[in-house]
Image (cartoon, rainbow, N blue to C red; front, side, top):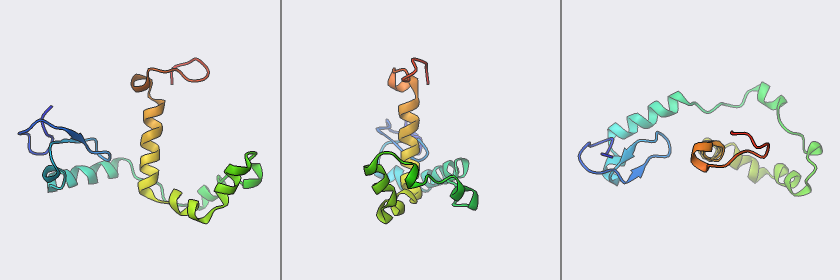
Length: 113
């Protein structure tokens, strides 16, 4: 596959944000690629905190695993989980895990995801 930025060399890498294929760091830092990143971010905006989101928060009293409850109470963890970059990567990993064509696995119910 050719580079999606310069269209000259064979692409070796894929951008995690916009999934554009590129051949080098020069192409990755190119203005054309930055525009692709911006368009990808506009397509899939990360939700900002709203009052509705607060009502959906999990209360630590409802969590049965004490280690998970302790983690949820950690201010450092709350800061990490609020990061848009981390949210993006978590969503990407979840999409990969749940994509049957990539994992060739079935869900616990025995059904395709």
